[in-house]
Image (cartoon, rainbow, N blue to C red; front, side, top):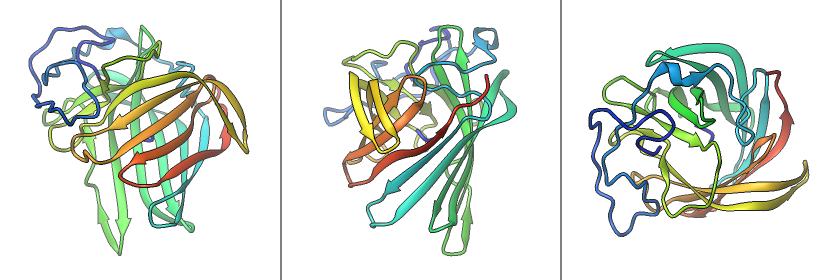
Length: 246
């Protein structure tokens, strides 16, 4: 995922799906007391993803340049495909995400997203393959509805600064990313352009508690910048953007 709160977007009933202690050292409190149980009703989802802060229209393309902790330059290319995948009965949009260093692909991922009727964008899983030192791995792949995995929200319909966050995904011990809106109305100046009304989120997972990232999203564009503010020095900026057709 380039880039959920229980009961958000699509209802608040359902069986308890997972429990997690949220200690005093947690960076983000998802506000669910360690119990996450969203109800997913396919009737509550729409075909398009037109949330202004994550506009996943078919054909949209982002190229992000990341200076990583090892001093290498990663190029991340994200493209919204004209493809769909059924997950938990929901027709999701397929987004292709490729990470390369010096032209060599190190990670190739297909992510699945869908927007609910309120405008929240949900993340339903990923099929990812990584390549390192001649080894191929699919670790990190997961699908909502399989082996206890659950979808989460990656972009709120109306992002506002809050004391609580939201779960972006949930598979205990495997996929536990969380997000929280910490600033709104920001301006970001990049070589590609200047963006106003930017929202800033903090992304964190208890699986890597020492790593904290800030991500910046501009209306009408989506992701424009990320900064690792703890656990490293990675900085990623948007260097190319092509809007899709939707």
